[in-house]
Image (cartoon, rainbow, N blue to C red; front, side):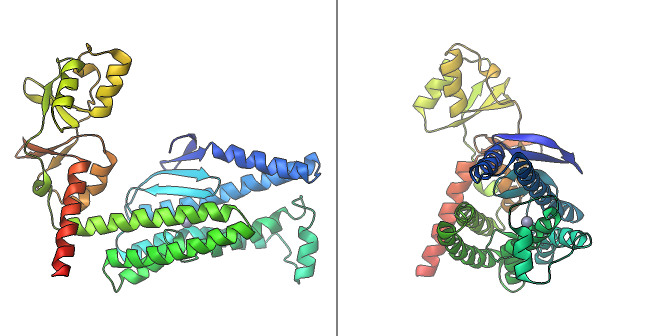
Length: 366
Ligand code: ZN
């Protein structure tokens, strides 16, 4: 994620923290200062926030390490002021696996609460609790606060608001009986309705709920669309969408030539060749950038993207969907019997999805 700094690596997973986290610390210091708290109180408050973020990190590691048991790697874990984000390489599609991976995060919080409970005395009644917690965080109520936060985090994460953990549990359970894309759609709608509730609640209580609500609405939509697209692509292969015609440009040509090609055609992505062999790809943004920064007389091979991505014509589209998507602005090369037979790009794939969606809708309309 942009604006993130690496903290380190655990079990081969990069841990990052987003710069906005500094804003949160500043905010905590500010409200404590405003409230007339002294330096010791402010330090305790900041320490507490840091302990919560270690907790969030452990929660995300819970998901990531459980996913690893099912041979799913995690690209990275990023800490944001509103929580953590573990980017799994893929989301387990087997309902039982998704269920376990989703539950693993809240389980970490329950475990932390249980461990903490061994070291604290839990107040007998709410009046006593209020007295202990009043006056902010200090050395004597730190662990009790930590205990409460972990209980709260496990409950909050289990609210069935997809794509939160509880929503994933719901989707996994629905997937036992329904097709995955239908289950996702239902879970996403439920999540979005709940998110509206979060946002409304945020206005009268904690404004963080507004941000979380917005994230849920968007996240649910993205995932619902993604599973829908994957469903539409089911049983189709790369060969069904590949472009047999694609523009090529020699690597020794100048940017000027690429600009001409860009203006002359509808193409935005080009294959760069040398002696008719593919050596790189070039997209519109790279051409424009080179033109502004280096002028029109630099050679294509100095500005092209040299990392070529190959796909076999028989690869299933639902399996390569993410790969194509992640390489949004690159041309992907399609091979068969070690021969280049065409190319593929994101736009291509999206068009194919739109057409098939329209076809299936008109089939219903009949
Ligand atoms: Zn979680």
